Amino acid sequence: GAGVSQSPRYKVAKRGQDVALRCDPISGHVSLFWYQQALGQGPEFLTYFQNEAQLDKSGLPSDRFFAERPEGSVSTLKIQRTQQEDSAVYLCASSWRKGQGADTQYFGPGTRLTVL
Amino acid sequence: DQQVKQNSPSLSVQEGRISILNCDYTNSMFDYFLWYKKYPAEGPTFLISISSIKDKNEDGRFTVFLNKSAKHLSLHIVPSQPGDSAVYFCAASAARGGSNYKLTFGKGTLLTVNP
Image (cartoon, rainbow over all chains, first blue to last red; front, side):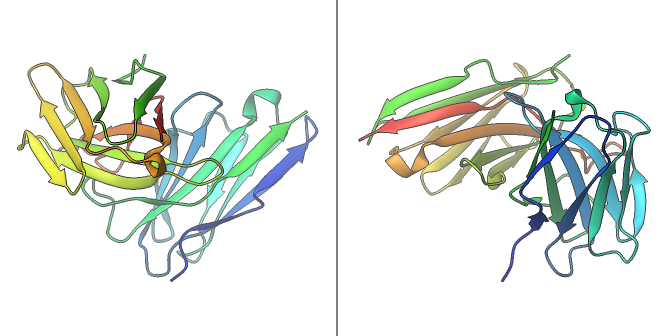
């Protein structure tokens, strides 16, 4: 019974580099979420997928951020031309049903991104 | 502008005593509230939730109280155990709204339970 997994767990990038962060949700979960957690803050919503459809990307900070879930399972969050302010923990979560506030979101351990 | 506020960055209690973690919210559209617990180097883990149609929800040692008029909720842990030491996040969603899946989190409170 695997939970949500994320890779890599830690990523160090030089400013200007592109990075790709992977999320493997719980098998069969319809909904997938990405959050950004800056140091000393709570997680902040980035984007939401229902199966392969990206229904909400309102939280993505800039057009340098791009997320996809092409087959409705694994998702990738890509950040182009990384900046120091992108340094944060990126959390992925999944839930069983179509996104509903009452549906429990299960979180992965996160990817800690440090941009030098 | 923080819509969910946890004004106590940290709390320290003795084992066996009650821990009370507080959370305030400003968005009157929020109608579903959750508490998550987070250990270092792990993702947040769901603990307990409450709908705005209730004012109390209990699960074992954990009880969440909701005061809608004050826009305030609290998490009570009785009795506190050393294994409860973690960061606790309060989160809210607007279930009636179009983006009912979106959780808004507070900054968290670090609870330390001393043996």
